Length: 274
Image (cartoon, one colour):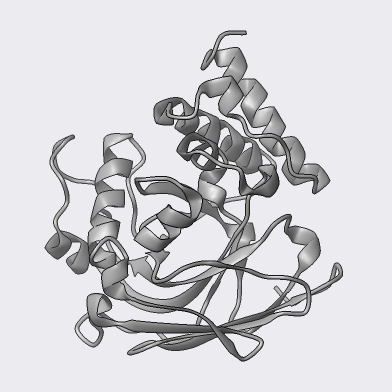
């Protein structure tokens, strides 16, 4: 089986899918596709997502990963990536999440955007502008993304995390909804606590310089790959500060200026409100 071949793509998807199904993290998949082969890693991601869609999940939006320089330093990678949000990843405000749904969770605070219009026009290779993204956004909301890795010990290269659906896990949207004429993402400040202790701080400017610029990058990349962002989808625009590990019993709250707060708790069993 040659590196990056169709058989290797299937084997990588099988490894990641088995880790998710069994709750046992797996070895990195870069031995199958190469640590820097991002195009092939996205082929693995598409296959993993297609299998979940075939099992009944629906696409709810996209997430942008590795937008924060601090997070890129944490993981030893040097560029953003993206993954697909599915409807079964979403939890409501102040939810309790069962740890049984997770393997090695880490959490980060983000600004989420709900699209009111498609971002599908223009020519391949011509980037969307921040102004175009701003016009397409219906509202912003505070969000917590529970990142997770199927790869043991978070031992990931860029190819590993891309293939693993950008290390997606679950996400929580807060109750506040703000149109962008009432809220400026780039100037927002974030403070996240775990069990009441400050665990992460950051700002909108830490997200590729501007969360709307991150969405413009995603919109351009997704359109050029033939799967554009469309109205109604949620976009998690990327971390505003460092992500931190979470464990059973933790309670996490993030406050983003202009958007209010969003919180989540983690239990140790199979329960939890959806």
